[in-house]
Length: 310
Image 1 (cartoon, rainbow, N blue to C red):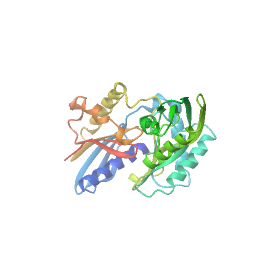
Image 2 (image 1 turned 90 degrees about the vertical axis):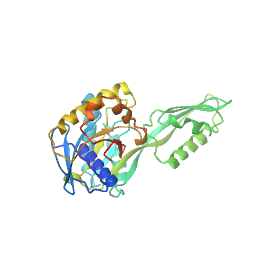
Image 3 (image 1 turned 180 degrees about the horizontal axis):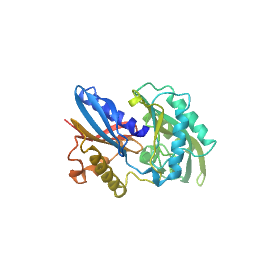
Image 4 (image 1 turned 60 degrees about the vertical axis):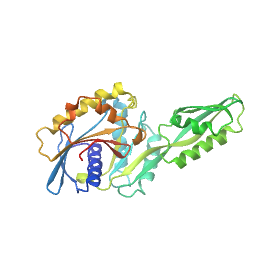
């Protein structure tokens, strides 16, 4: 049978398409091939959807083993229902104790209150390093997960600072929580002397979601995790993977009778709005997807259409 991750991704795409078209698509069956093809029915019409992740888990056996172990530990816990946990780029679930047990506890605490179809975030402890370089100026050089918000941090400091947030793979999606973190950095920086360095604790946030229903009777936790070394923003690395997956998905759909044929890819980005898969797909040979009506990506808990039926 398809993996739990592939099944959950197919369910998210089918639900998204149903909401977009006003058609009651419902998953009915799936093949066990690679990539698997899911069949959804609605009002006498048939949808065939091939689904595959945009990475090769075998490239990092250690990270994949830890992911599989964590998936089963979470699924065997007290929190029931179909849940999907998104691991940010360059991160992986812990592979040793006591970090594994702490991760299970934090993930279950975040998932427990979620209603069907709702997303949340798991808060995981990380440390940020702050160094004051000069009294003069009002500038903060920021590396790591907070790098894209360096201007907002710069606005809050007096002097020249270096902020190392490399341990933070994904900042909270909430602007309010990020603003609170920027204020905390300013508070820590205010009494610092030139040449002083401080490390303080905060948290990063990983997306967890509860699916609206149990697709094909599947339940438990699925974990979307790419090999930490994979850089999904690197077109040189990603374009061959996208090409390979589209080609394999197109072959899997050959001979399948359906009114609508689609391809779903699972991708790892810190936030769904930062994915750039459309540019990769549209730069490839159109023959790779000339016989499908829909290509969509599932990223950080959201469905991102690349192109779809009118």
